[in-house]
Amino acid sequence: MKRARGIIIAIDGPSGAGKSTLARTLAKRLGYLQLDTGAMYRAMAWLARATGLDLSNEAAVQLFCATADIELEPVNGSSRVFANGREVTAEIRTPEISMLTSRISALGPVREAMTNLQRRMGAQGGVVLEGRDIGTVVFPDAELKFYLTASAEERGRRRFLELQAKGDSISLEATIQDVQQRDAQDAGRLLAPLRQAADARPIDSTGLTVDEVVSLMEQAARAILAGKER
Ligand code: DC
Image (tube, rainbow, N blue to C red):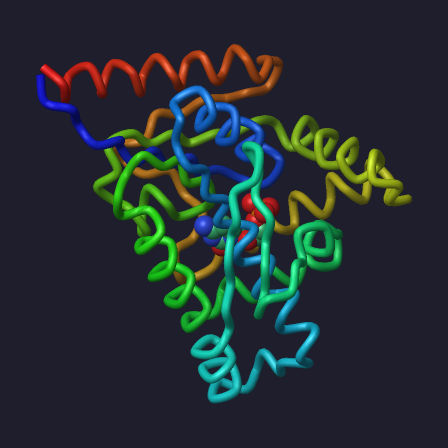
């Protein structure tokens, strides 16, 4: 029996749908690499703010993208994130950076730089990538694609609990509003908007446990892998 290379698994969907937890858990069960592409865009936003980048200056944005160095370092089923060599893992998870990321990720040069990097990182297979445009743009030929959703209230509540656990004093209402505003921006942009790929399997995670969703995903992955080994 020939040993098949690992497949590429794409998980797309709006913010707070549970992509990160699911991608991490699924990658662990399959022994795959997890790539959080949102963290890469967040690191770009962090760097843009740190360097005072003027988002309306096209030449400056081009130069910024050509020189930005974003790295993900896998550690114990999670990732450390670096921007130009500086660790930004915790600093990129604030409401302010979330909003800036949603704006900066609409820019062509930013998308091009991140898409190229993601393709290089995932090309070998054996990888679970989560984001907004993985199944539609980054890896349209991925062997397995999921489109994960949950109600806006549920997604806002999950984000709120995450932020509250970190000591952030944002309210539940403001978090739900933030999530809805970001989704509208991400789905309404011209380049690589958030949308379900025609061949993606939709999963509504409202009211489901992580284990229930991961088991569905793992079953689908193992069925494809079994087919490849035959
Ligand atoms: O998944 P996240 O919340 O960490 O993503 C932060 C932002 O990055 C999100 O508002 C949209 C953008 N993003 C994107 O445009 N394309 C991706 N593949 C991943 C994230």
